[in-house]
Amino acid sequence: MAAIPFFQYSISMTRTLSGFIAAVMIFTLSIGVSQTMASETQSAALSSLRGASGAELENLAEHYLKQREADVRELMDIVGEQEGMLLKSQRVTAKSKDWFSITLLGAIKATEAAPLLARLITVRDSSFSLVSDEGNPHWYAFPAAVALSKIGLPAVQPLLDLIRTAPPASTAFHLGGVTLEALLGEELAIFVAKRYAQDHADFAQANRMTALTTLIRTGHKRWTASSASDFLPE
Image 1 (spheres, rainbow, N blue to C red):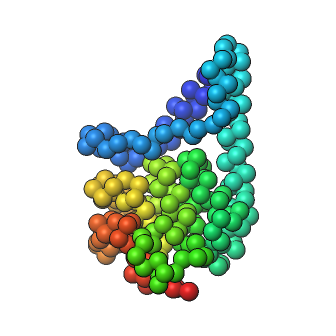
Image 2: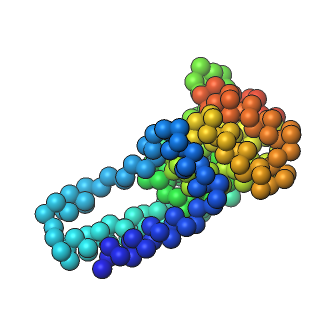
C-alpha cells in the first residue's frame, strides 16, 4: 500500500533531524510560535481525492508524491545547470527561468533544495539598486534567501553551516543571519545559534557570535546590503 511507504518516509525524515533542530521544535512549541511553515502545497489534481476510494486513493496519493519529487528534481536541475554562472555574475534576471525556479523551490517548500539555495544566497535580482530600492527592504532582492525562509526548519542547518564558514563581514554571512531571523524570528534564531555553537567551536568565536546576534536583532526588513564589506553596488 502507498500509505505505508509514505508513513515510513515521514518517520525516516524525522529521524534525520539533528539534535538542535529537535530542540528548536520543542522550544518553538514551548513559546507558542506559530507553525505556519507546515502548510501543504496545493494542487488541482488533489480534487480527485474527493470522489476516490480504496486502491484509487492509494494510486492518486502515490502519483501526487512521485510528481512532486519529479517537479523538485526538474527545478533543481534548472538552477543547478546555471549555478556556476549565477555565482560568477551574482545576478539573476527577474522573471527569468532561473528566477522562477528558485522562487518555486521556496514556494513548494522543497527541503532537498536548501543546500543549493544556501550556496546561491548572495545572488541578487539584477534590477536591484541601492538608490532606487533605498526605501524597500534589501533582503527581498535575494531570491534564494527568500526561498530558504519559506522552506522552513530544514533550511536552518544549511544556513548555520554557511554562517559558520563565511567571513563575518561578508554578504553571505549577513544574509545567512538575517534569513535565519526571517525564518525563525529574533529570539528563536539566537537560541538556535547558541545551541549550534555548542557543537562547533569555530562558530562560537566571540566576533562571529557578536556579529550574528547583531544581524539577527537588526532583522531582514531593516538590513541593508551596503553594510556588508564585499557588497558591490553595481
